[in-house]
Amino acid sequence: MDLRLTGKRALVTGSSSGIGFGIARAFCAAGIDLVLTWRNEAYRTRAEAWFADGGHHPMPRFFELDVTDRAGWSDVADRVGPVHILVNNAGVSVFGPTDEASYADYDWIMGVNFGGVANGLVTFVPRIKTQGQGGHIVNVASMAAYLSGPQAGIYTASKFAVRGLTECLRGNL
Image 1: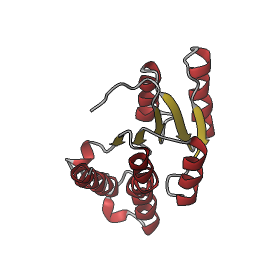
Image 2: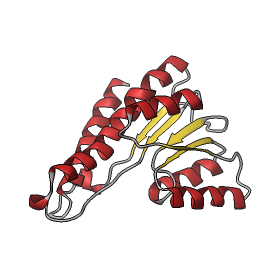
Image 3: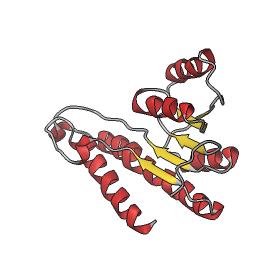
């Protein structure tokens, strides 16, 4: 496995805050060409300022992306070119008793946390394979993928799903 990362391109979802922003900063330090997706304008502005103010190069390209939007994924893929590293990081949650959750809560959390990962995989795995250079896929889950709790049932279910899918994908690839 080739772990030389300079000259490689990574696409990171949910990359303008939290864990995604940490991943983006680490990849920047490794010399990786970054494509960062965002939903929150204020977070994107702060992330962009961090890269600009620190003189970190190369400057990432930022794309607004709702990870539940399959056409949006396709558009981003067509615009960014080859991707060597896909990091499916975007995630959401509603905390509270699961027995009080609504259909909308289920649709939103599962759509982003699991559906967003599936959309990233369907969009980029064939492209990465066609490039013939190998690649890396990181699906960010959570400790919730291993441990359940009473206040995050849907989130936990989504992260269990991501973990299971990722373990199966490892066997396929």
